[in-house]
Image (cartoon, rainbow, N blue to C red):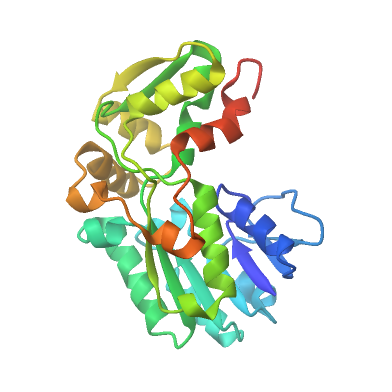
Length: 283
C-alpha cells in the first residue's frame, strides 16, 4: 500500500490516479473531505499532528510526502513524519521538495526544507527527492480575475522561469515510488522553456479565444495576495525567485525526460486541460 499526502492537490490528485491505474493499493490523505478514484481509500488527517498518521501508515510500503504551507512555518516539525514512517515499517519515502533548496539555500523556508531532506537521507529508508521549480498550476490564482474581468494580475510581467506541469511531477513521483532504480536520486523538475507571466496570459487568451489583459502588480501587492494562503517567509522566498531568477533557476533540466522518456509538457498543454477554470460562468 502507498500513502499519498496532499492527495487532493494538483500533484497528489494526479499521482493518486496514476498509482491506482498501476494496480497499487493507495491511501489518499488530505485535510478535508474529498472524492477519490474508485478503489482508493481516503483518510482525513492533519500533517501538523503526525501522531494521527500512525494508523494511516501502518502496513504501508511507501509514502509520498507533500508539505502544506503551514508545515513550512518555523514552529513546524515535519521531520516527525519521517520518524513515524520509519517506525511504522514504511520502506520508501518520496519527498516533494523545492528547487530553491539548491538555488537559494539561505532562504528561510529553503533552510527548513534542506533540513527535512537531510533527515530523510539519515532515516535509513529508501528515498528520492523531487525539486520542482515554478508550477504551471500557480496560474489558477488568476482564474477568478480572468473569468470576471478578463485580466491576469501578476508581478514581474516580463521575467520568466521554466514552469513545470504538476502532471509531470506526479508521473515522476509515481516512477520513484514504484521503481528501485530511482532510489537515492534528486530530481530537478522544470518545464521545457522559460515563459513569462505576460506570455502565460497570452496562452490563456489563445485557449479561451478571447482577449486577456495583463496587469502588473508591485512586489508589495503580490506579497499581500500570497500571504492570504502561505506564510510571509514562503511568499518572500518565492518572490525573490520569480523577480530575479539566477542562472540555475533559468536552466532547463533534463530530469523529467530522463525519468519519463519524453520532453516536459509545455504550459499550453496545462492551460488546455484546465481552460474551464478560466471561462466566464465557471466557478
